[in-house]
Image (cartoon, rainbow, N blue to C red; front, side, top):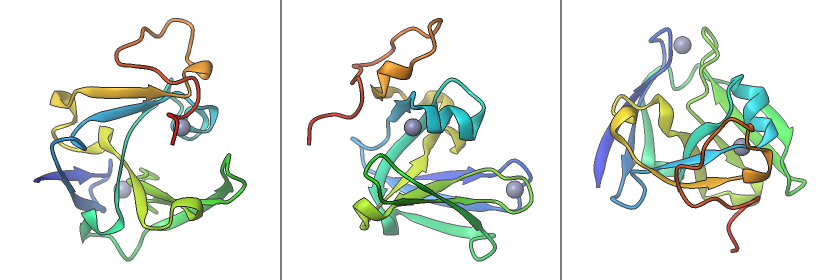
Length: 139
Ligand SMILES: [Zn+2]
Ligand SMILES: [Zn+2]
């Protein structure tokens, strides 16, 4: 288990995520929600237990945005109220876990990709870097 520090763009929100060896990998998500929320081709994520994230700054000031996920249940995205960086979200369909944005961790550049999801929505110029699932992996 290692600790990874993260920060939003403006610095008002700072956090630490605990990741075990299997979790210290990026999962690339090419879904159209990620494309819309990030303005990029995909996002970098990992699923961790709720208590794996702790905020050293700004944790009580986070705002949330809620939308309906593919499950038909709510997804709550938490973001810095000043700069809109989105450290994590949680799905009411998967209450005990959260999805952290691994691309925001300070060591993100040296973390390897483990898998890609929602490959069906991949931008045409984007090359595969890890095993790709068309939507989600089988449960
Ligand atoms: Zn911020
Ligand atoms: Zn996505």
